[in-house]
Image (tube, rainbow, N blue to C red; front, side, top):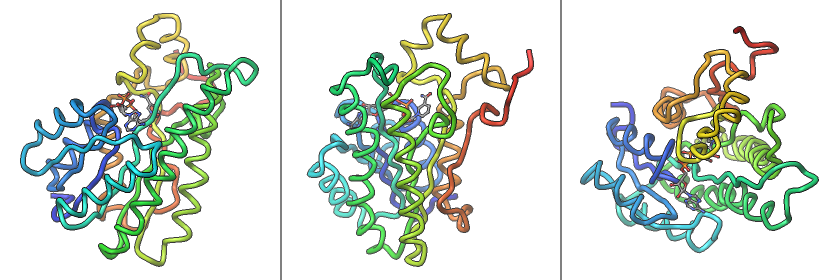
Length: 254
Ligand code: NAD
């Protein structure tokens, strides 16, 4: 098993990529702390796993919640080896720079960027106490390319995640902590459900994906598993694109 004797904390574990990762990490031997804003969703994931998982309700945009989730992981399972700062939001009125409100900007940045900062801030001392570990921060392919449909706060938040993760990787590399960003292409999860339900908006995105389909949450969980496990022992500071070829394409085939 690829995560035997490891303790992992995954934010946004109640849905989508986070949930698929909780299930996979547990299957690979990890003890998992399932963190989510929605208590019932976190509990449902933890119950599906059984004894090797515990749910914890936290809002990652709040420092006290991030401090508490890390403390809970150490108290419950004795240590922390892997942190997957995955929780994030997408707001339907997050659009062009010219019409996105300050309130939406603040909301998205607070969760997607500050939430990852706080997750790292409180997890790193715990990882150091465990002798090192792996941090995975969820960004997006839009942090690397301009999005075809504007979503300025989301894109800016994910660009911040990439830059911050690189700097963390450099600072802590000699202390046995690795930090990498996962950059998914579009994934069929509740985050995009409303958007993908509209066939025009769905096709507007689909046309850019060489593979001709959206990703499944399990495909992101597999990529996160690689970054979490010792198989990626020389991988740090990277922006791991798992995007069905989007970023490699100039024009996609019919
Ligand atoms: P999702 O909506 O299915 O799941 C996100 C989970 O995060 C939810 O359970 C939600 O309750 C939780 N959450 C939201 N705000 C929170 C907060 N403040 N504190 C704690 N938990 C909170 O989304 P997903 O598609 O699985 O997305 C996971 C990550 O992947 C996000 O960071 C997202 O931006 C990123 N991502 C998704 C896609 C995609 O196409 N779905 C593409 C690129 C990147």
